[in-house]
Amino acid sequence: MGWNWLSIGASLLTLVSGVKSSPPLVERTWNGTEYGCKCYLGDECWPSDSSWAGLNSTVDGNLVVTIPPGASCHSTFEGPLGTLSTYDAAACADTTAMFADESWTVERPAAALWTYFTNDTCRPTGNPSESCTLGYYGLYVIVAKTKDHIKAGVDFARENNLRLIIRNTGHDFIGRSTGWGALVINTHSFQDIEFIAEFSGPGDYHSQAVTIGAGVQGRALLRQAHEQDPPIIVLTGECPTVGVAGGLIQGGGHGPLTPTYGMVADTALSFDVVTAAGEFLTANADENPDLFWALKGGGPSAFAVVLSVTMKTFPEQASHGVVIEINSTHTSDPEVFWEGVRVFHKHANSIVDAGLYAYFELSEMRLHVKPIVGFMKEPTEVASALQPLFDEFKSKGIPHSTYENQYPSLFDLYSDLFEDEGAGTSALTGGWMFSHQDVEENNDGIIEAFRTVMSPRDDMQSQGFIIGHLWDAGHSMPVSNSATNPRFRSSTNFAIVALPVPIGATLAQKEDLQNVLTNIQDAAMRKAGPNGCAYVNEGDPYQPDWQYNFWGSEYPKLLELRKKWDPNGVFYAVSTPGTEDWEVIEYGTRLCRKT
Ligand SMILES: Cc1cc2nc3c(=O)[nH]c(=O)nc-3n(C[C@H](O)[C@H](O)[C@H](O)COP(=O)(O)OP(=O)(O)OC[C@H]3O[C@@H](n4cnc5c(N)ncnc54)[C@H](O)[C@@H]3O)c2cc1C
Ligand SMILES: *[C@@H]1O[C@H](CO)[C@@H](O)[C@H](O)[C@H]1NC(C)=O
Ligand SMILES: *[C@@H]1O[C@H](CO)[C@@H](O)[C@H](O)[C@H]1NC(C)=O
Ligand SMILES: *[C@@H]1O[C@H](CO)[C@@H](O)[C@H](O)[C@H]1NC(C)=O
Ligand SMILES: *[C@@H]1O[C@H](CO)[C@@H](O)[C@H](O)[C@H]1NC(C)=O
Image 1: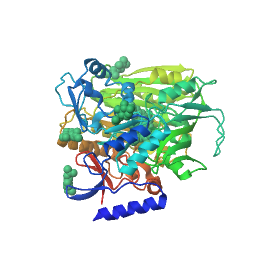
Image 2: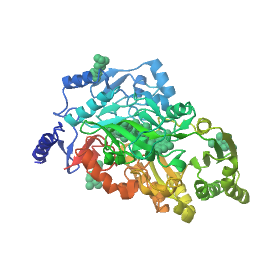
Image 3: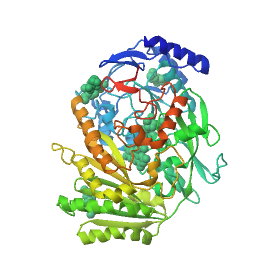
Image 4: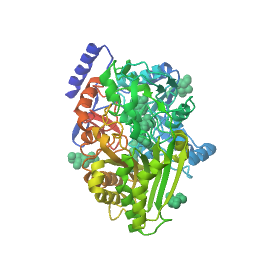
């Protein structure tokens, strides 16, 4: 019944826009509900071998079949397109050694750093007879080398109603760069970096800038910026290997310069993109300004594929770094430890009020604040901002260690004090931002919430962990210039919640852990921070009211823009604007729209 209407709708759209649009969705009923789904291998609509070969020649032979990175440790890979013999002792040793390495994982065409959303069905192993299947990886990957390859992938997915995934570095915490049975476009080859002495507009900014390709990662960009004469800096995430133009800027982006210059998205000047309709467009203050705004924090893989972005750059400055640790080498008493955490967090407001940034990790008996960053700050300025904290540590008898150093540039500080993070871990991610007011009025409640995150249930002691980020995007930029949640302008601590999931967990165990994350851990965080919000790149996509929590008052406008720029859902990333009717059904596999 719905089928005819959908197909009439689709052909009308073809007539109106002149763009070949999707064929009808595939009807399915699951668990008593009717859906129209994307087209998957085995469906009648699935492209023939010769269509795939045609796509491969359009992309100059850069179409590959996904083989999970762990396959070399298994005798066979039982893929959807057939079984392959995959065991290779040398490759397996390499994979085993490198599986936790971020940079290695980024280089695999479809791999995800956080493996939970790949379904973990082919990890490195010492037992080659263990099975290796595709799990939730995409089926084919276009390792795009030119913008025409990206357009070819978007067109092919749209015209054949395929699930489309854009994969840049694979850093996504919530599985948005992988998808069962999908066609993946990998943007990692887009590594161009071009510095501009004076941006000539449009808009009212006429100073230094940089244009970066979709695949450029944080540290490479910072290094090249540092090599300019005089050295300059650019807003990136704290993580050296995270992409800049992909998920980071489209989700908003925060980093060590956020106190000084706002969210990463606030610094964008112009985007070159491929739209859902397969058009090459520029989006900036003059051309397609609505799309420009939406791309600045409105959600990744939602409005267009970004080919490149031009961003503001700023002069390098001397910077001061501080490290603070409290862990089991300092005390074995959990109450002393938690009192230390309480005192540290109580002073978070004075840290952000001084324009400082801090990254910290918190787990049971380990507070690792590394680093606190004072960009453009003298050691004395940083010392006076931290004095009340150290005074209270002293008066309360909180044992701790501290270390500090002055650096000639932020890049020197960044290289010395920011640490590479691991890959290959299976975990669920949530998170919540605590505002200045929340910390002022309810610091003790926030600490209780942290303890709930660590030990959410009697049978789950010391299992969760937190990654905190002290910054105040409103400190020097009280007005947002982007689609990011206005509440970030009064933030003090944006804290990620992580809950490990054991490899081999059953569907029932996974459902239970997701429930713990959403309804125990994150629920405690939300309750303790009523003036906070959530961050779409580092948050629980299954939280209630994600629209409001991620974008606040900006959501209705983003929803309209999604309908305008991607009316048929060519793009999909969970909990991005306009995805309310879409659902991944049949245990994490088919992407479908409720009909
Ligand atoms: C170790 C680690 C540290 C992090 N640190 C920070 C931090 O300091 N600050 C911060 O804000 N975030 C941080 N993040 C989160 C980060 O913002 C997200 O993981 C982000 O989605 C990564 O984007 P990516 O393009 O590198 O990754 P991917 O996983 O490849 O892509 C992420 C999302 O962006 C989409 N996407 C990628 N490229 C494009 C494109 N060209 N056009 C359209 N859509 C695209 C993908 O489809 C997917 O939905 C961190 C993550 C990790 C794992
Ligand atoms: C099926 O639907 C019921 C009722 O809506 C719901 O409670 C249940 O969780 C659903 N099952 C699955 C596997 O989603
Ligand atoms: C695409 O073409 C290249 C070059 O001819 C070939 O090596 C590759 O296997 C092809 N990919 C697929 C999926 O067939
Ligand atoms: C995903 O993992 C679950 C176990 O948690 C398993 O039951 C299911 O078959 C897997 N699905 C795929 C497509 O790998
Ligand atoms: C605990 O703190 C000390 C510094 O005093 C540090 O050397 C050590 O690595 C920390 N331990 C952990 C587990 O982080």
